[in-house]
Image (tube, rainbow, N blue to C red; front, top):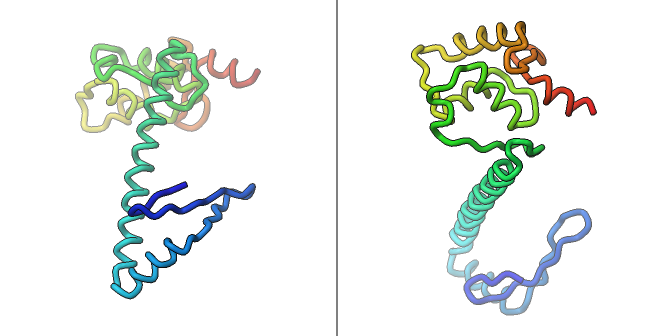
Length: 168
């Protein structure tokens, strides 16, 4: 049940996911009044704004939940979200930090995603082209299997552990 301006709206969701609302006389009267007053568009926009706000909050809660699960599983979560301290990679090497990011995400990552993860983890690039500095480090790291890094596609890297788990 949803209450809008003190007017209850009963609804259910069908198997197809389509919501079905039961329109009460009080709700119909409220809508008619807004039509007459010319305020129905404003009410619709207000509800859309409320929905956007609550969807954003739901996304924030979902991210926090995934981060908590990732931390609780010591980075072994199969969730596509991972958590890190915002200074975790401040003093780290690129290859080691990239391997950590990949292991926590549980999937191969593109160089762009790795750069974003490094930045989020506090890594400071001393270049105007972070992609240009990360890509060759990862290429050489994968070639030497440093920290378990392996090439998983064009500008995409994984670790031996992640690939082994993915195949099983």
